[in-house]
Image (cartoon, rainbow, N blue to C red; front, side, top):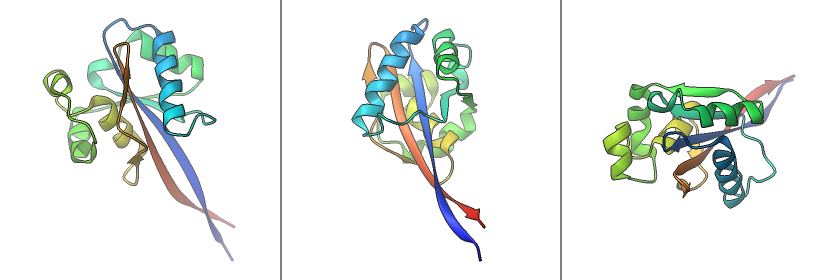
Length: 139
């Protein structure tokens, strides 16, 4: 007989101004996790859009956390845009989505993902936490 177990996947979507230091990104991420009552959790993944794929601060933040980065293609960001909670004119103009960080988190976390809260913004960094609970077969 097999049992289903729930596995929780936590993805932090990140957007930022150019040349934002990793320390700032990590600080905003910690606050976003705290505000979503996930302070004791480490994200499984950082996610961002192609527009931020080479942003050194995001890359260094992922390295310090020892987690991978998912670079989400524009079509995937647009596909999840109706599920975002925030509409930012700046994000629409620059990234083509209502909220880059929210869309990146949702797209990278998977079809069943939900945002834990609207994005958190501080010091030129936006961070959104998506959570996906999936069933895994267990024997």
